[in-house]
Image (cartoon, rainbow, N blue to C red; front, side):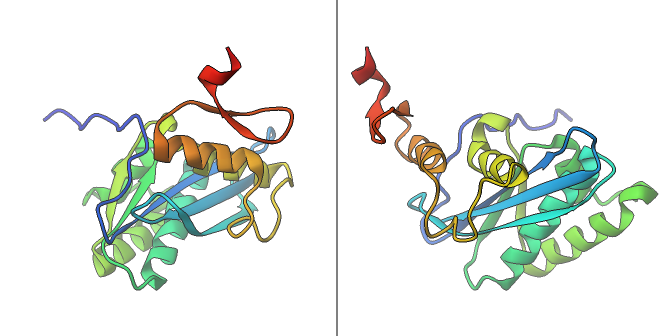
Length: 186
């Protein structure tokens, strides 16, 4: 059986549903991880999210922790259905498989699977290009450049990524603090 192809661009969830994207940024030493969980509605609007800083000995463990945090946030939401997306193929494969997971990720995988079954969550592997907003949030959090109220007041760089996803037109943030279509700069 051929594995499904990864989605390469962010897509709005179906009407009445939510999509959660998650990602992790690791420090250069590989000891610290910053996970981002980003919730958007069927119009592509940022509605909720969280960031988490923790010790992690590998990217896989960090990505699994990000997925677990996304599942826990989804569990507490009243909305159904909810789709969770990550750009880590191994983490998603382990999370949706019924096979016995490796011992080093066993507790995380079992938590993810339990919440996934409880809330009937769909977990999907996407390409990094479809997970840019979560990646940007994780990166900003890792650099200490994200305010506590980032969901209500997202930084300009994050707004740019959110808008690109929703309207599918190249936008850039120019030096006078306004968004312009890429064609306007030519």
